[in-house]
Length: 151
Image 1: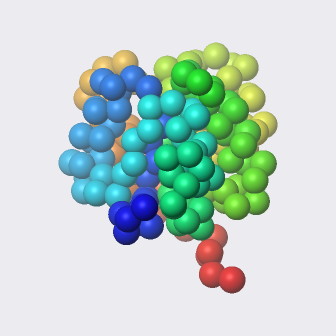
Image 2: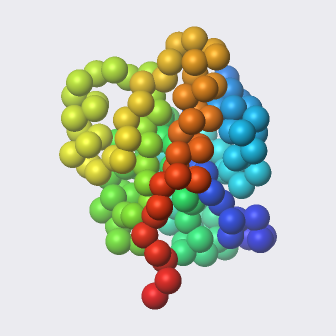
C-alpha cells in the first residue's frame, strides 16, 4: 500500500452510500476528511483493520484514530466488527463510535458491553446528521487524547 494508508485518521464503515456521502461531506467541511477511508461492509472493515485481503500490504500499526461504525452491514455485521476490534490487543485502543439508525435498547447495551466508546443514533434530518458527524470528528480527532502508541 502507499503512504496514504499510513495516515488514516477516520475509518468510516457504512454501507449506505447516501449516509456515507453525507458523513464525508460533513467531515470535509470541518477539514477532517483528508485522511479518511470508507469501507462498505464489515468484511472489508476487518480486512482494513487487520491488514488482510485487499489491505494485506498495510501496516496494522498504522490504524485509524477513530472508527465510525454502522451496525447494519452486509457480510459481517457491525457488532461482530466491534467484537473483533475490542478483542484484539492490536486494535483494542482504537476508539469506536457506533453511528447507526438503530435505537434498539439491546443494540445500545450490547455495544457498550463489547467496549464501544460512543453510541449515536443517526439523526434523520439532513442538517442535524451533518452537524453530528462534524462534531464527532472534531471531538475524536482534536479534543480526545488517545493513549500513546510509542513503545
